[in-house]
Image 1 (tube, rainbow, N blue to C red):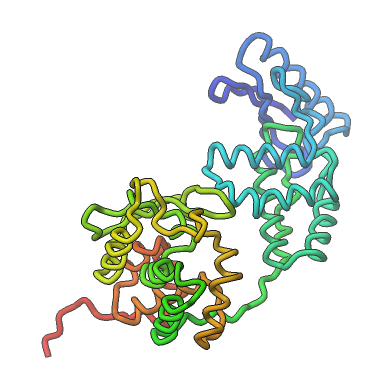
Image 2: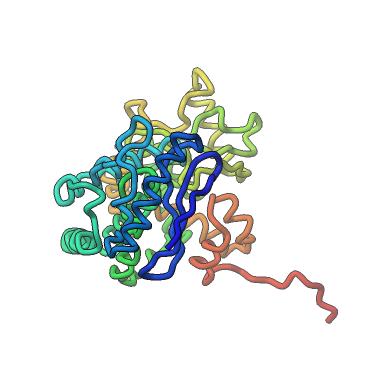
Length: 371
């Protein structure tokens, strides 16, 4: 078996055909193409060739991967690897702080408790064992999501740290089967009107009436409505820019990481105009909707206190506040709006929109009829 030394964008790697599987293998050495780098590459090359010749070949490649690259050690624990992967996602991929708190930090705590060992020691058996712990303690969907995160972390870490060439997490998520769940029904137009009137008439929660009107009328996500500032509205109140979201005490980008500009209906524009005249914001940086204490509206607190109370008072079957988004989209589609235009306004992917709202989309022929 022959191993070749190659230059890939100024850095060296080794390439050869695995004597056991016949597949091509690559090994990034993390060194520059220099005299010293070539000498190091030749040493590893000889080791691989001799091991293959005398039956000591390590198919995981861990035996041949450098323990240090420059001044940085490549041996790392599972917790350290996942932590660095999280930092990379936040700095380079725009991962929201709210996602770190809700998805990444709980997984890190599980790793600290059940898998705090060298990442290089994670093989298929240990990966399956950890998946079993997830299956015993989490819902199927959450367990699957956490295994997928670990798979992504290992993919990112290969070539940077001491990790086996084969990703031990590949294929494990498939064991978690999603259980069909009946979709939550949108509010009917009559129910939506009852909710709005209930907030307007509420002794304790009328403060939120405009906020509820906006969410039911615009189909925004709760965090998007909570992060809305007066500067995001056009001067004549005919459109709104939605590019920020507030969640779990943190303001960041929208769920899709994309901003959008949406035209306002006359009724929503009138509500916002009256609200601006009433609250008289001192600057355009002020939030449009605030809690009674003048803070950003926390969706969980709003739901637990105001939302549940008012729905019970007006006799509307409880659904989470997020149902306001589904309601706005459903009513628009039933009214004959183009699902492409609704998807753009709601910040939805058109294919996803068609998948989940196909029963209410009013499909019409765009061609001329000659009869």
